[in-house]
Length: 299
Image (cartoon, rainbow, N blue to C red; front, side, top):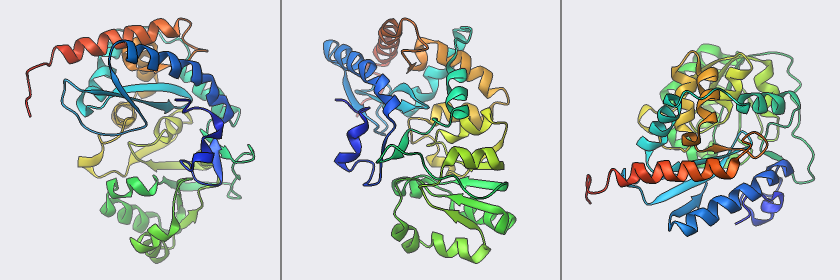
């Protein structure tokens, strides 16, 4: 399927001005092996999709998370349960968090670059008291409007909203978001401003369960809070990982151990020496989980 090829911007999936970072091509061989194994085992799969199937799910979803392959069933409960199962394996960390740290330090953490392969702009702000990282337009309905207004009223001009790279300002104008930002005197930065540079400069970061920014912020030593509607916080593939970020004080050390386990669904060929074996073990584990639920819940 070649979903990690940097020329994906030509399809319009990521807009006209941005494209995938070329280093994600390293996941191309991992994607191919994963798909080949799914086809051999008659497992349905989809890319970067969210849904909530029953516990004897039909489909596995895959995408990239912080530069690594991320696989989950399209079942919100199992999205989280597989991570707790991985934690119970109690495997020593092998470098997944270090991989993320290195990409942050080398300014190559973003999955996006501009279409000419240049980096996003750095903001002129030296320090930011509070940063609120917004999702794309299709996830705006998952935000808690009351929480947004509360933090805007609290921080006023000390709060900076960062738009998602795939974001239409006309939508934000129609839904009243821009009016609210102006009312409280908050700052707003476009999607082409580097998010990771902003996180480094911020003291406090508000984000969602849909974003990679929660773990990034913790790694950089920032305080974080979610801005999701409570009943929508589990609607995304990253919600399981972000559950740990928002609920565990030792989230970084826990996730480093979790990512080392095949049950996590996290794979990278430069970290996981036997990455094919890790995919095989994940599929064996998740199929057993599915089999154990057959006949439990009927339509």
